[in-house]
Image (cartoon, rainbow, N blue to C red; front, side, top):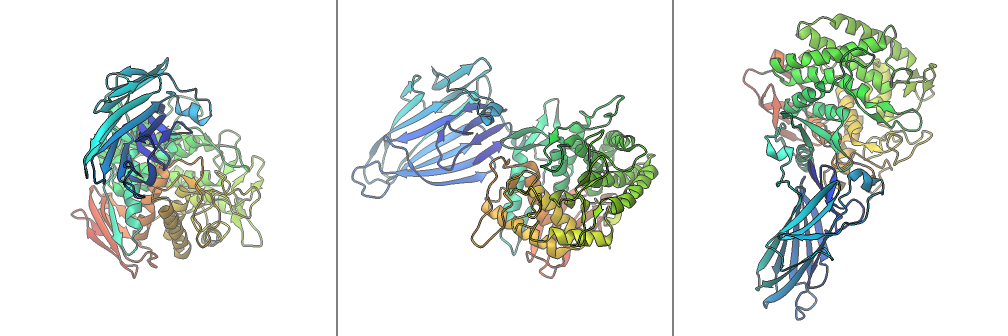
Amino acid sequence: MICVALPALAVSTDQGQMTGQGLEGFYRAGRRLLSRCRLRVSGREPLAVQARMTAADRARFVGALRASPHSGPDPDVVVERIRHADGTERITLLSAALRPLRVPVEVALGTDLAELGAIASGTAGPELPASVRDSGLRWSCPTGSSSVTADPPPMDALASAGLLRWEFELPPGGSRSVELRVRPDGAGPGRAVGRSVMSPLAAAEASGDDPRVQPLLRTSVEDLNALLLRDPAHPADMHLAAGAPWRCGPAPADALAAARMTLALGTRLAAGTLRALARIQLRGAGPQSGMIPGSRRDAGTHLPPACTGTEATLLFPALLAEARRWGLADPETEALLPAAERCLTWLRTTVGDGTYLCDPQPGGPVRCETQAHAHRAALLGADLLDACGRPGAAELREWAQELRTAFREGFWVDDPGGGRPAAALTPDGTAVPHLGAAAVHLLDTGLLGGGEPAPGLLDRVQTEQLARLLGGPSMDSGWGLRGLAAKEAGYNPFGHRTGAVRVHETAVAVSGLATAGYEKEASSLLRGALAAAGTFGYRLPEMHAGEQRTDGSAPLPHPAACRPAATAAAAGVLLPLTLAGIRPDAPARTVTLRPVRSAPLGEIVLTGLRVAGAPFSVRVSRLGLAMVEEAADGLQLGA
C-alpha cells in the first residue's frame, strides 16, 4: 500500500505495522526517513482487521485487541492508524470497555536512512543508532538525518531501543490519540506539488449505469495529482513523475504520453510538461540536436533496448498540436512552437534520404511503434506549422506519404492467418514477425482539424486484420492486452514487454479500435480493464501479469510495477472518455462527438471536463447517442 504525495511516499503492508523489511517506510525525495514503526498496546500488537487507501496520499489501518481481562472473547479497544505520505501518522485508541482502562502504548522506531536505489538492490545498511531529541528520536549519518516527534510528548524515550512510551487513561467510550511526525532534519512539514498549488487537472466526475467508472476516474485523477512534480526554478510548470515507488523522477516519454491522454481535463498539464521539456531539449550542432533526452527502455527478448528520447521527441509536437485543438491559448502555442520545430527538424534530418526512422540511432532496428510515432508527429506537426504560418509542412506531409507507402508493403508479414505487422525490421531488412502490443500505436493516429483523425500507416484491410488479432484470445487476456501474444516464442506473463498487460497500451488499443470503428474488440478490452481496475482498488498498476482470465480469478500483480503510475492513471481517464468520442477543434470553435454506438457500459455521463478553456459535460445514452450538456459559449457541435 503506497501513499503518494511527491516528493513524499509511505510504503506499508496491509498489516499496518512498519517492520523495517523490504520497502516499508516513510520516504522523502528518495531517502527512507523511517523504516520501522511498530505499535504495541497493553504489551501486544493489535490484530489487524482492515486496511484501505482513503486517498492517493492516505491509508487507514484498523486493529482490535482485548485490554480488559473481564471483556470475554470480544475486543474492547479499537486502534486506528491514519498514515499520510507527508510523514504524519495519527494513532487513536477507542475504548468500548465498561470500566476505565489504563493502557500502556509503545512505538518502536528505527531507520537506515537508505536511498531507494540501495533498498531496491538489497544493499541498504543496518539500522542506525538513535538519540533522544525534544519530544522524540533522531537518527543521522554522513548523508542525512531524520527525526520523529510525538504529540503529546512520550512519558519515556529510550534511544537504545528506539522506543517511545505513553500510558493513557481511557474512560468507557473514550479515546486518546498520538500524532507522530517524521521529518528530515531542518525541514518543515513539506507540501506536495499537487496540494500546494491549484491542480492543473479538472476534477471530472462520471456517473451512469456502470458503478465502476466513477471510482476509476476519481482514483486516477487523485493519483495523477499525487505524482505531480515542479521545477523549483519554474514553479508554474508542473509535469508528472513516471510512478511510485521506483520511478519518482521525471521521465519525458511517460510525462508526455500521460499529459496527452488527459487533455480532456484541461491543457495546463500539457503546457507545463511541454515547457519543462523544452528547457532540456538538446541544442547546438550534432545528430542529437533537437532531441528530448531520455533513457533506454527494455524491449524484451526479440529486440534491443529502445530509446525513450526518440519517443519523447516525436510525442512533443503531437502533444502541442492536439493541445491546441483542445484549447491551448495561441500565445502559449506560439511560445512552444520553436521547440516543436526543432523536434520536427531532428526527425527529418535523422531520416535523411531514407524512409524509416531507426531507433536507437544510428544502426538500430526499424521499430513498428517508432514509425507510428514518427508518422503521427509529421502529420500533426505539419498541421501545426500550417496553422501558425510556419514553413516545412509540405515536406513533412510528403515524407509521411512515402512512409505510408513503404510501410504497408515492407512491414506487412503474410501468413495463413491473414498477416500481421512486423514488430521491426532488422538493419539487414529482415522482418521480426512476432505480434505484440506495440502494434496498437498504429491505431493511434492523432487528431486533426474538424474532428477528423489523421490517416494511419495501415490500409483498411490491414487495419481490420490488426483489430481481429488484438481482439483474439492470444492478445486479449480478459484483463487487458498482453505485451506479447501468448502463442509467440518467448512469451512470459510477467515479462515487461513479453507478455505482461501494460495498462497504457490497453487504453491506447481501446481508443484506437473505437476510433477505427472496431467496437466489439474495443469493448472487450475496455470491460477487461475495468474488471482489473476493480481488483486493484481502482488504482491501476503500470502492468500486471498477462495470465488468462477465468471464472473466479483475479489478475496477478507484477512485483516490479509502479503503482500508481502516470500512464496507468492517465489510462484510467482515457478509458471512459473513449466512450464519448470527444474530438474538439477549439480554433474552429467546434466539437465533434463520435461515441461508441454499442454503449458497452450502458449510459454514461461525464462532467467537469474542459474543452476550449471552459467546462464541458457530455451524456452517452444506452442507445449510443451522445449529447452535450455543458460547453463554452459559442462552441458549435460539428457534423
